[in-house]
Image (cartoon, rainbow, N blue to C red; front, side, top):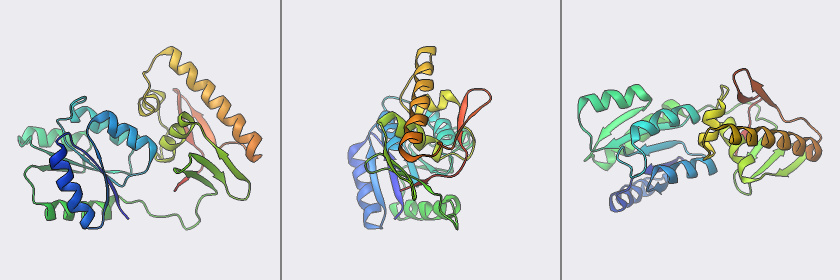
Length: 227
């Protein structure tokens, strides 16, 4: 089932959209702010983000490039009252897949989501990865070796990397984990990586397939399944 999160601070409108999309067969959650959106994304996988630009704590034009950087395989549809052509161009250039303006007929929105999913949904590997990141319970499994429980920060760190085929810079990782970019927090990330590597080696008997990149980022050496 396609999973959608709708970032919209108008609760009544968000619930109307959510009710329609749920009836159409989609699983949908609502986030009333950018902070709620980031928190939900860090805890689970979504196929599509519906984004209102006028969120109370962060302008949507700031959200779009971060979403595209951290979650490149997630579809992004802007749904906004900003109808100016310049806004539409800016949203698309920043990385939105679609830019729709309110009011929109709900069946048209559903059709746009369906079309977007056909384009962006990644193809399943013929041979699924042996490494599995389990959202429920925050666990990492290595098939045939066992399962290790993760802390919230460890899970968020691996979850971000698992959704990116390219290395993720430290600054983006910290942002996605709800941290500020400063020397003290950067040191904490180094410690988190050290402890995570040690935990996986001790519990599963294998090295975590994690590599550090020149310039301070990280990447997974093999794909991880997210279930």
